[in-house]
Image (cartoon, rainbow, N blue to C red; front, side):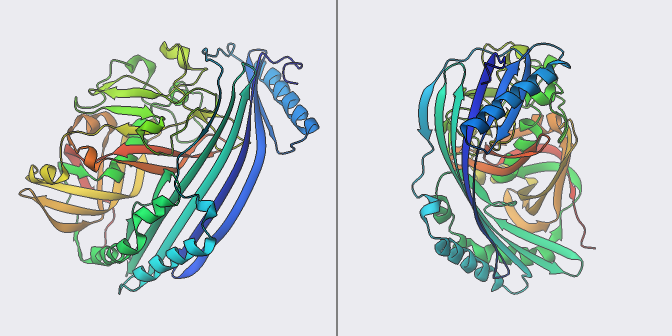
Length: 476
């Protein structure tokens, strides 16, 4: 139908999405929901411009009408185009792929999952002084069938699991909280229920609660310029905000500036900017060999195979996240395979895959012993970064003072701030593969209407010198 109406290219994504969400709060069930969604999105090029339309009317007539609408939109868009869309060449693929998992979370009874969350919730509430306890589990199973006018026919099934617990303590006007295994929903991976079992929520629940209470009596983080060590999950978020977003080529080109702005990484800086110190190497890697990340797949939503892209090599900026449409603008013959969509009714766009810092040679124990004076910060509490991703401030839930090569007293309300390139150039040590973990960020927003996408960030603890350290909140 698209070709009959004048399209020179067309692709379609049929997506069947199944999700399950469970939460508890203070021993009570908060959310207990399961839903399914089935529909398709059709993308075309006609008169040199893009058109997109979607439908959940899965009949021959409904699909034909959707294709005709996509072409009509493309022809209307062509009236305002600056130049014709040009797609990088890509071979046609006929393939089927399923992400690896051991236990299908949708085959585990809801009662079993809820029982674990309620037990973890209760274990936190047993700690005197805790005023709010929260737990959650999230599961997604997405089947995507992709076909293009160039001959590709690809089926992919991705299973995503995640969970986390949070204890909050209110004292007067002050709030302290601790999360495990990470804040903002916990840890999320491309995998099954085995993730939840491996995290052992019951074991960690008392510690999380005790630290939330203890933080009220901790010393305020001192304000100074000094040495900072970031835990792996916090470094993962630092990568996400100050490397992942600015390398999205549609942001750089001003094609996508609706949500969270553009980028300081203009095209003239490719292969010229000293982004970081020489020990820093960052890749964008969607291959399963990189790990079970939220940015892992076999093919992106343009039918381009998963790839590894060098972003920062020996400190030098050397790569963007690209699409078939934008690849030629940076001298590439093919797309980097980073186009993704949240659902069948959303237009695919450039998104992060797994943007990870490669491990270094240090152990965390050696790194702390090598630090005469510094602050170790763990688990994000809040973040702020400008719309070009250049100036930032982050706060974490907890910090530890390092004196004479030893981790000493707990510190509360820690924060740090800086300028992206100055910060990454101050990195002088990165922990080894034994400390490296591929963290999942399930809530990355971009676009208008906004799409929420999962991304992955592999990181191990790292040290930074001459960083502005301060207090994000005051209990005074």
